[in-house]
Image (cartoon, rainbow, N blue to C red; front, side, top):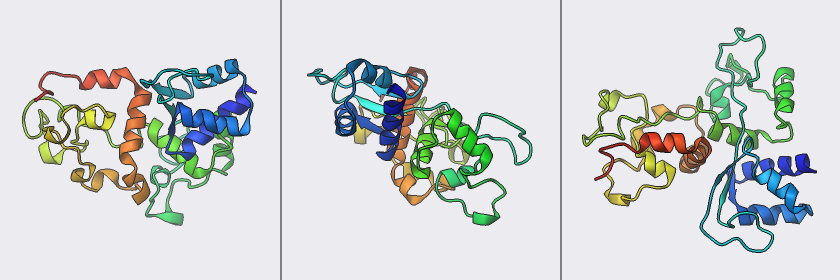
Length: 244
């Protein structure tokens, strides 16, 4: 039963941009299953598949966590980064990263696989118990978990007082110049922040291969990512010179 509920939870979260608050998730589970309290706890607190941003509301009734806690889908599955033909066998998916992000310009001419049905990929998905996800659900899960897919935030931009922080590359930097606290959802300066809160200001190059839908949802994808990666990335951004 635990395995069935776990798969249902992952699928449901990925169907809703990779996350739901616990109240919504609990209601969706209850619509399809009668789940023992202990089973629900084991699924929700499985840190190999779930990341949690704890809420502030009081726990009521059968709820095992604050109803406003954000439940985020997590996986250790990654894309293989080796060139086609170089990888004999690994635990990563052999897929085109731009296909996963929604907009590969090469289509059928792409030299990297575009198929989950490819026997190798099908076998990898079974290992991770993700074979029942649709492409869209799986790609949502990968984007918020695989650091290879999302452009990296420039930590140097987020330090110091200059226009580009202490980043020496300024406008030629290949990483995103954006407020990391904004992406984490905890910037206390709002519109007065000296770091940009505009993803579009970083230009389209960084998001080559991303569909328009995914570009629209970037803020949610990054926030999910930071909830998954946890304190280590948040602490890295808490540096002198960040405050106004």
